[in-house]
Amino acid sequence: MPEGHSIHRLARQFSDVFAGERLRVSSPQGRFAAGARLIDGATLTSARAHGKHLFLDFGQDTGTALVLRVHLGLYGAWSFGGDETFRGASSIGAPRRMGETDTFDAPMAPADTSADTPAHDAGAAPAYAGPPAPVGQVRVRLVSAHGWADLRGPSACEVITPPEAAVVVDRLGPDPLVPGTGPEEFLRRVSARGVAIGQLLMDQNVLAGVGNIYRAESLFRQGIDPYLPGRTLGREAGRDLWQDLVVLMNDGVRDGKIITTRPEHRSSKDERGHVAPVWPDNAYYVYQRDGMDCRVCGTTVRLAEMQARKLFWCPGCQLPG
Image (cartoon, rainbow, N blue to C red; front, side, top):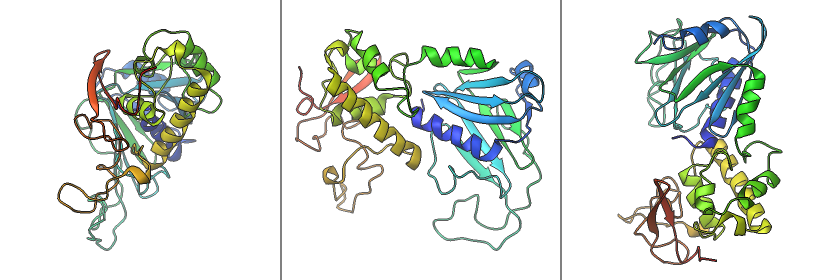
């Protein structure tokens, strides 16, 4: 499932390419036909995210302002495409994101076959002639004059009112990527619970947007035992944990990938003796590194199960108590 930084990148992408545009909205699959009709022909005024929820705000062209709420879940994905003007600032030159793909057309141009040219940019392409026929089970299609976006396989997709969207956000915990939502509310929710902090960080009603990677890596970076009861975390440790998540997740929005290691803790060589890249060889401290030596203390990184999810931690760096 995409973590919160990916959803915030999606919100930026929608703002870049659709904000202020009047959109044609349809449901090629048919399952969302009634909802699509409610916002068909409306103008997208803004796009925002809170945790793993994407909110697309539509203006009053068709009457009452409405919101398209999407949660990708495990299998959902957006794809984008359009002409040469359609690429958003958040996607130009960016690496591929979970839950998101891009395809673009461009006017006839000289072929570019350099090794670092994306496949969809190599060679001459025909001028944009509108969106292609839907491929697969497209729940929602959004179309502007210059491009389109298709949604497949979300766990939630609905048209709601702004007050209803506010209720969804209010139920969620604070989001490290939304200024003004923490850390006080995060500390309040954590300190009220006696369950393990490793479990609380994955509870979207306590902290919105954090998934398994950010959970494992932030607890390691702060030296916190994942089994520590939330109410014993302490204010200083809780503030430091929140601030570290703010930094890490904003880096994820900027880079389109999660990298949590500090330069001094990265291996210079891979298993074959070649220079090891930061991604993916040196991206994490403990996530998916069970059985390997800790980058900091050399203790074997461990793997356990917590609430049916894999938990990675270093018992040497994350001491109990």
